[in-house]
Image (cartoon, rainbow, N blue to C red; front, side, top):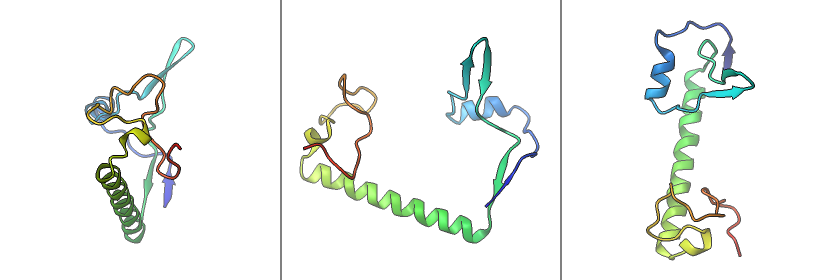
Length: 106
């Protein structure tokens, strides 16, 4: 994987990334709005690097699916501070949104 610093800017790139869901790309620093998105910087990958990343993504998806199935099949929602039927967007006050899969609470 190689990082390139000086790529071309796409016309309307700010509107495009917001339309694709990146709505928090600008942060207020003092009196200035600063974007952490760097449109002119990009990475290029070889086919083998792309295949490796795709395989890793597929493995993670499978692992998360199996973990979710285990939670559902064993009714472990309470162990994860994630009550059955509640939306992920409205957690109980004081709970985390994303449970760790390596160490459930006792």
